[in-house]
Length: 242
Image (cartoon, rainbow, N blue to C red; front, side):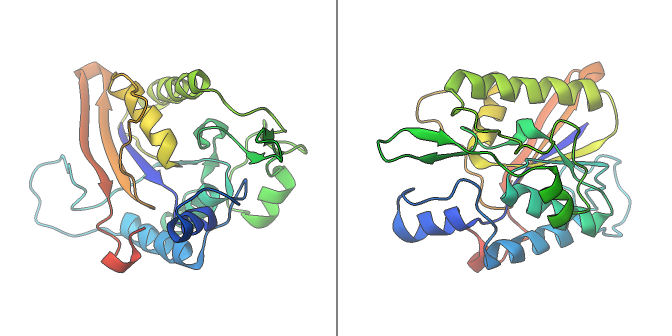
């Protein structure tokens, strides 16, 4: 399995934080900004590109020739679903929404007394109307996918990351599948601590700019786990990196 973890394009919350330096007045499920849509289009063109280079070795560790994605999964948060839909259209794949790819914490707003209030999230009808090329799983019905659940705890975040990694191994581990996950920056940290089997420190952070790509090659039968690159944004001009 070649696994690509891709962070979503710039959201309205990302822009607001860049402008104010705080997370105050954030929305629970922000849309992409105009810059974010441009980033997603550049990402899609990059992932779709194939280059006719002189044949050398079969292994292409830095995707000099192509990505050749065979599977595309996305968080059901709007910013990730929109990013994935743009990529999917460029490469002819229908992105599959995967609830476990959501950002850490889930969907919530800060209440008047500082409590975090769970929000509903978008439902099946909304996704089918807004992003008709997405594949919406049966688990997302008429109720919003988050369904007002409480904020996810730290232990739950790590458990979810482990669940995603195990599911990927079971579905794709000993295959030649090229799998992309369109997800989130904070969840990337949890996911990588599980994949690399390292301890999660209180202030651990792994840089992942908007639409950045990380690549992991895995093959259980060959005892292979290789982190080829992370936070790759070669598809973006300098003034588009956020």
